[in-house]
Amino acid sequence: WIAEQIGLDNTASNIRELLLQSLLQEDEVYLQGDAFEKVMESSASYSEYQRIVRQLVKEEIKNNPKYKQESFSYNPDEYLSDEQNKKRRIYFGGETSDKDRLWVQGVKLFNGTFPVSIIASRKEYPETWAVAENELTWMLRNAWISSDAYIDKDGSVVVTYRIEDKLDLRPDFQNKQPLYNIISILLGVPYHDILGGNPDMKTIVEWQEVVK
Image (cartoon, rainbow, N blue to C red; front, side, top):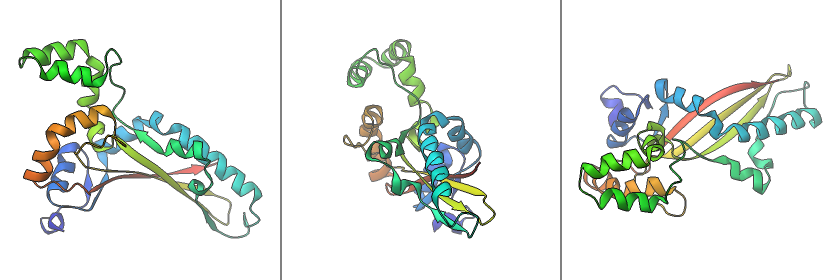
């Protein structure tokens, strides 16, 4: 609501704009521009889910008597097996270094003298630092993907995909990855409890594709 009053819509193209929307207590924000393109470039994170959805949609139009007789909708997620449903949980930002466990990497970083320990850590664990510096790590690190299909009477099929996460910089050892939790321990209190960032704000990406 506050964002609307000062002329902002509910979109963001980078992490700075997303954090601002959170501080302004926006309920949900749609990624666009550079942020949207980064999600599209990271399609490896959700390509297996898309493959499953396309197959389910093709089977549906093959067997549904409504096909080319009338328009109808179809929700592929309702027909996923338990194993396939696991593909809906997706992670962005890349893979951290496997040289040491993340808690070991964190101990080495915070147990040393700054900035010497930072320089040493960047040299020893470049993959982990690449993840930490990737905007998608914080915008959509632990997200869910879903889909809906619309089949027109003329036979054309459009699938709408939706990726959703919450900008919640608090650790969650049951559902979030270790790196996110480690840094969230440091950032969560000042961001949410002191600055007032909205921990329930949804970060959303939506796009459509034609299934042939």
